[in-house]
Length: 119
Image (cartoon, rainbow, N blue to C red):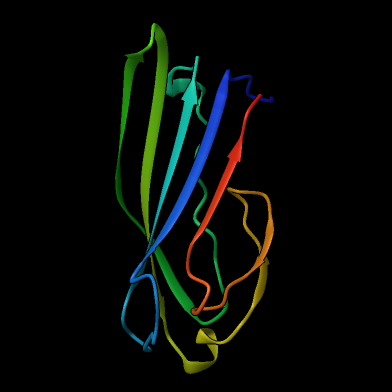
């Protein structure tokens, strides 16, 4: 079911933001989903993507509801860790991000992305 929102913001940040990345060392992605006019129950789950040659796992997160400028604001932040298991996993691999919904390149040199959408 589609989500209706006064304003929807999705932010994605990578830590470390730049390489070089090394086999066995974690790369952390922090995703924040913020919706104005929605409750936490209305926010969709943020899936954990899988990449060949990379071990991935959820690394915690937080959620909150608040009133800002007279409107309910729900915010969910998730931390996702990715650990390359082989050198080839650090190369460029094209994938479609299931959270942002935009195609982009999983290039360690291009390590941040932000998507905004308002409905």
